[in-house]
Amino acid sequence: QVQLVESGGGLVQPGGSLRLSCTTSGADFANYHMGWYRQAPGKQREFVARITTGGATKTADSVKGRFTISRDNAKNTAYLQMASLKPEDAAAYYCYAADLSQVHWGQGTQVTVSS
Image 1: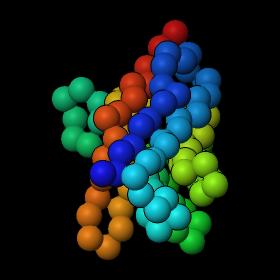
Image 2 (image 1 turned 180 degrees about the vertical axis):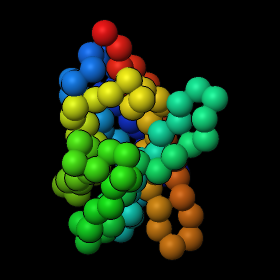
Image 3 (image 1 turned 90 degrees about the horizontal axis):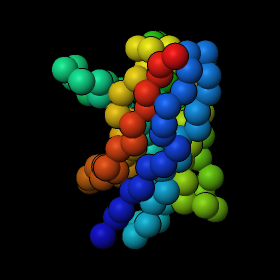
Image 4 (image 1 turned 90 degrees about the vertical axis):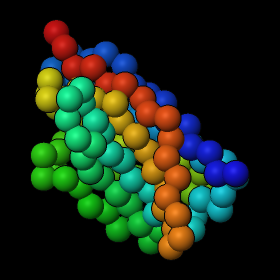
């Protein structure tokens, strides 16, 4: 059973930074592409960033230059470093792990950006 646990969310002021973590268990982490989506109240879930098993990354235009995705295979953990946060970045952030056959999701972690 593959499980993903996100952490690192919280309240931050505009312009601040947070680092989200997504730790997996029950899977061979190195063989999974990892990524993040987010969903704000009343909006559809949207892609944020992803990193392949080989380390190639892609980020959404809305966060490009501010958010960085990375992974540590030794720790079975993917990270989303978020900087220069804006109020519009506030959302529940969900981590996923994907291979050729299925996608697994975490339970989400809330990010609030407010002064």
